[in-house]
Length: 327
Image 1 (cartoon, rainbow, N blue to C red):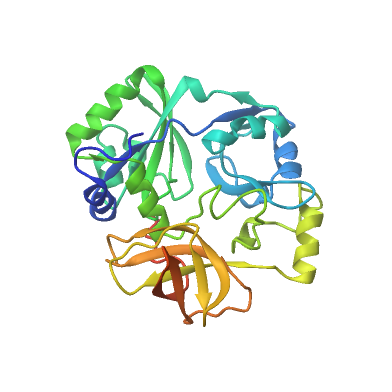
Image 2 (cartoon, rainbow, N blue to C red):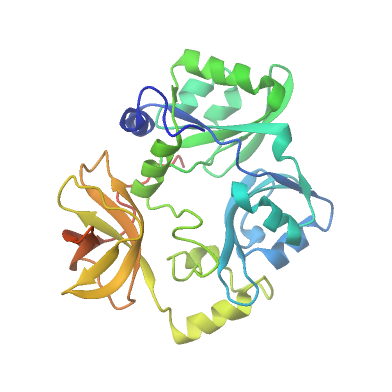
């Protein structure tokens, strides 16, 4: 996926917010796990509770370090059949997932095209009718050019949309057909500004081996009601004694972008650091996510240190731009 296409990052970003943009996210991993023991294995490994969903649905979950509770990867699980699961890790973490989930890596056999935006479903439905009806976080089967494909109501932009898992041999034709129907090809730059506005974490930034789901404000991904999952005891200890830091949003007052790895100051005292930052095309100001001391409050006025200068900002709740998912 390029940083941007000739149309540019801002236009691609706004296409996802107002129309339909599409992303080639084939670099993401896919590990298929099949069999009667698959459900129990995932339950004992990942943080979320698969009992909350059923075949034909998907779920956001975490793979944790068993001793520290840090997030080794954040994952989407597509439950495609009674005994069949597609585990979707971040690209660089597929091998790490395979170390604990003995599935089959099919990443190089399929492409994944994410079509996102308020017009996404209507645009795709002439080619794939199921795209109009799949629910948010639903998964359904379909066909394109006679080949079996999967359609999921998932994405990484904060907008309604779908992700299409298709065999490699028909992926170029599908991409070209979607361009012909009016989808705007979008690159890595827009994908990042969209997920930032939506307050969605990126592994290696808001999540990582030294960062727990509780610190990242993602306690809802952790089902303590399960008697077992990797990292459970470490998170119970953290819950008991309290988190050392928390993830917040930072909204600037000017168009100057905020950037990652900048110091966050309150009254001249360092209270944290930014993890992701950029210019918001929707809000027209600089925004960032970052970790701060747990006693910091929403509405506090802070500064972000950039090249020796201090940029005024305010601690705000996430997301910056309200998510617009289909029901």
